[in-house]
Image: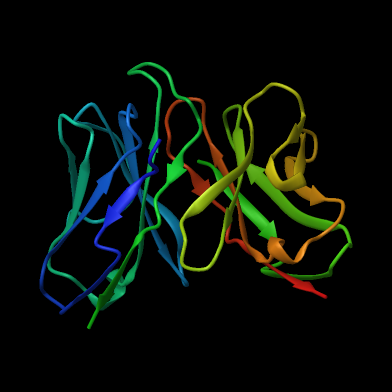
Length: 116
Length: 113
């Protein structure tokens, strides 16, 4: 099976702009989670989607949003970019049903976002 | 709330020596514990997981970890370090409901020849 893919791999944006990142999970996986990784704050959970519904949410401002499509592909959007949004954004997929969890998350290679 | 503390942000070991990475957790619910490895410019790869079965968990690449409830620890070990083990290692915890992982700060491992 193909792994988790994320596009683009690298992105440079200007403060105030918005950005959309994409994640394609492993075939058959219906859960997609997003994480932000920075040198200062480490790895932090953004949100999780399952069957097009947000199932869990981290402590990030409303500028960070996401969605999931019927084919389980997910996008996250960051509006009004700030310098502090520069980070590696990681997507992870897992199997399981609406009432159970596989507890194994498979991560993509990430999208490196630089805000100037 | 859950939290994870990894003791030591950097560890240096000689090739062939024991690798020991420390992880302590805090959780108000039965924890599920994980170790991930990250190589430069890559995502995270799952090394092993504890989900309330055997307390000694064996993972990939010769790594293993032991869950000790009394010490709230989940330390990662490998008997003999290899140059390819040079990477950053993350301990993480989640509750029984959900895929929300809380990560430790990470430990970067340097392997000396």
